[in-house]
Image (cartoon, rainbow over all chains, first blue to last red):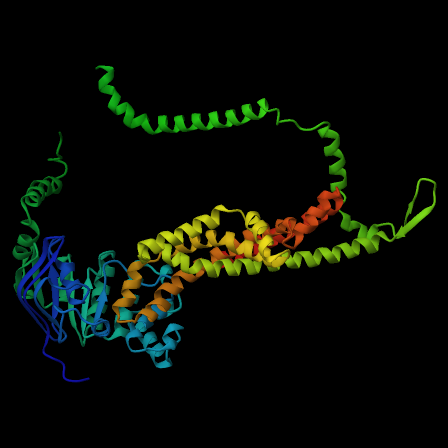
Length: 275
Length: 297
């Protein structure tokens, strides 16, 4: 591989618009190689839009966006787009495995960017790829279930298979959109640990909601609010104050709902709302 | 509280039930109209002596002709009224020959159903791809394909067979084509439905690792769709086995020819033999295909 550019992502005066609604407006955002970034923000703040933009699924309306040395504001030819996707690994909200394939076949899908030709059509992978897929499943602790069909696995196991697929893909940039949304706290912690391990040689950008997971996943936290960057701080200086501001003051309605209702439920016996 | 104030709530709570009641009433009226009009046209008679006819038929039916292949009279003498010997027949030999013919006809029926199903499935595949809503084929093409499927499904195999016998002549070819053209409609619908249930998120995930279109097809679409395709194929094939047993009646070959022969000569024993074979064929195929489909899903 040639020299890795120090800047993985560079966004400048960028705007994403869909149906006349502005989804995302970013003046400037730079991400260096190997950074661990968490994106936080309420629903509709533009987190998923940002990830879609970075993975080349969406083009900015104006401004410039450079990801892994490719300018995304111009329409990329199909081959270029595939090359970009090969280098950008994604772990998505919910689990997106091919249900009827076994865990190891799902992991091997990660290698499709490298393995080409008719053998990849028959899912007949080279022996070294299969060995690596076994190693990847071992790394996520699922080697025993290598030949279990994906739809027979539990939610946490599926997400681990998705991480094994990520390990096989060996991307330079990993985008994870609420990878722990459907998991219990201990499962979420484990998946986050594995995710960070998988991203050892890559840049990791994760959308998270639970503050408890922030220290596991990030060194830098970006808060999005109504499509704009509200704060961009190192993890150490992100406290309850910043997060509280971000989630509470999204709009008048949300604020009104958040304070009194939360109070009355924190003291359920004394102040049950009775009409 | 006035009655009017209650009415909106009444409509909410009982509106659906009243709708269902009205539909049931309309259905009952239709059934009554059918019976009444047939009675008025005097078309609901059971013939002159139904019970005696039923009894005679049932007795002959209860003794299938294949038993004669072993227990028949080997030396059956046909005599005229004045007692002269006309001819001697070995019943066992006659019935054994009939059984051999029956075996051949069964094999023809299986061949018609199998080849007709294969042809129908192959023809339906592109039409299903065009009609599946999630694949977003160009609208006019989708409508055209849906039209073809609907027409194919609404015309009975026998009607296709009658037309095709006039075109390609008597024999199994007409049967194969008739089965293919009719089952085309069922295949197209079932295939399109299984394409529509594809997990687009999984497909996008495979696309997301940088896989090319052919790789996406073979790694995400094919494994998801293949078991369903095989399952629907077996299901329609099963139907076609049943359908092809009567195609012979219109001259398209197979068991149907023996059925029409037996019924027109009132040989209920032989009909009973043929129907036994049909029953065994259909149920064994049913059981087999059910097992395979269960294993696939």
